[in-house]
Image (cartoon, rainbow, N blue to C red; front, side):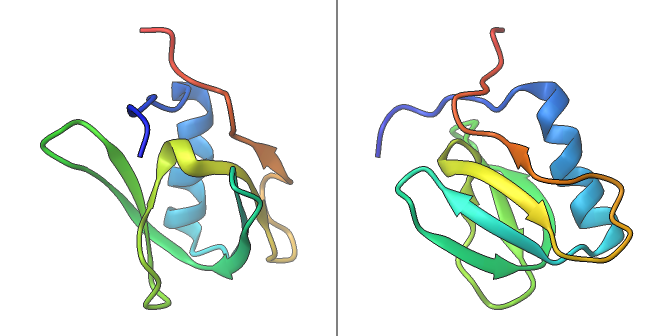
Length: 90
């Protein structure tokens, strides 16, 4: 896999909100794959790579592999968020 690119800090908040509220998400990856899952938390590896973990028994996804997330819950506090190529400058 390519060198890790940290996600833009402002966009990271959407992942935290989705985890905190238990939103079911449509997850779009940069390779074009999509799936639906409920994220539970993020984790940072010793290598400083960050991952989104899911409750549905799915493998975790490295944050820079996320292209977009869309909450599927009615009344969610945000809509589709594009994450791909939105990396921190620091």
